[in-house]
Image 1 (spheres, rainbow, N blue to C red):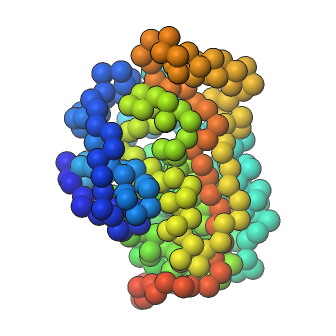
Image 2 (image 1 turned 90 degrees about the horizontal axis):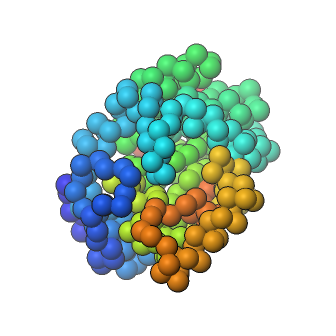
Length: 313
């Protein structure tokens, strides 16, 4: 476990201890010891601190068993590839908006693409690149006809030409230093290029505030939990403008009017301290997906030298 003195979202700080707890009520136990969540005093982002470090993260995400059987926050055994397919409706919403706003030139890169589902849903003939370190979903993405880079996000070299869109769906908050990756990735976008940050966990949502340590999405490999204000605070100085946000719930397998009403009842009982200790349920606002568009740069960025690649516009 590594202690980080600065915020891994905005690069500033200082960090203040916010929540420390063991996980006796958690269904998932990753052997990482107790959670220690710190909040950045500059941007408000929560983050795991100490954090597992890159080696532990890579070991977890590259394991082949991760794609054959897993356990969700409710304790149900699931096949991740089936769970991914259940998110088709949610991903289709993102893909439809991206397709309508793509600039004229440039490839589309999905970092942490899994099987390439998001890329397949974008109705555009240009080059689509799936970055996926796990061998099993990378093979599936290749069979779907996508160009595949089997590597980790932080190891990526800059593309030879500016990109029309970078997708990071449920990926960015898993990186050891998401702030450092963002500083590079924004530089890869063409003017008018799109950046989709999907599934970022919101520590200011209703259920996180009410359930605290029993919030379902606290996880030792979720490195950062930026609030919506923290997301905008970091991205706006890079010359990115917010296009739209989604708070997916009814488009996910976890969401329906009946489940929503039941969860409201659970929340009321929790507030009255009448319910047994339990993990929080899925709820609107637990996660937020952001779509940004690149305008001009206000903050100097590191200039990178393109490398030879088969990636083309």
